[in-house]
Image (cartoon, rainbow, N blue to C red):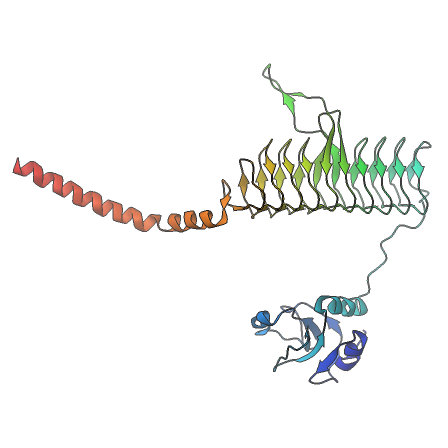
Length: 347
């Protein structure tokens, strides 16, 4: 087991220790889990209340922040310093694929770029093109005509259907499915016949797609994911969607067909978006928002159906008062009924 004194760790991350520099640290951990031989971190002074029950031996803090109950290391960049210490105690393992496995199946017409790595049991079909330094992990299936840009990584068991285009430096995590048939059917005769699925998926540069996410191909043309967009695990993006640049799409979000988004859109967990709507740039859709109509630029919506945050808070406040209002209504109804009865008696 590795161990360092607090003073030694401070020297390692070019920080200044305060308190007992001889404390022995054996690991790094988050605030809620840290023990007396572990170091944790606090990014901002206004979060000091998080340390009330903390058992850490020491805390990494911003320059100028002093904590009476803890020995500290003051640094200019808390997160970067904590990462260095985490990597020291638990070094990252190299996950890269070196060379082309003899157990991989590669079609003779496939073009493999320089320094590409292809793992065991990966399948590369006809006319596939892999750029330089591409990493294809074990069990990946890349179907006919697909193209993967330089320095992209595809983790185990992901599936890319035919003619999928992936840009440079993209990351596709395990069990993602790119380019499956869209959920489109002709039901005119009372049965459900699959509509033509002749398009593909085009993924931009620097895109990341989480595990078990699915992006359907377009009926015609392309389903598009813009440069720099980050997609969490378990996200569904339907056929013909066009997602803008630098979107953030969190887990369990479902986006129905032919929806478009501007740049820098954020969708929190379990957002549901109906088909054929547009989400304006810089819009923020809160967790579990139900999007039924177009969304303006810079909007901040929550709720089902989604409404502006302030309006939704008023709605929720009113709903919370409904039980009390129901009692008051019943009392008023009783009073009105008594008054009606008295008027009838006078007649």
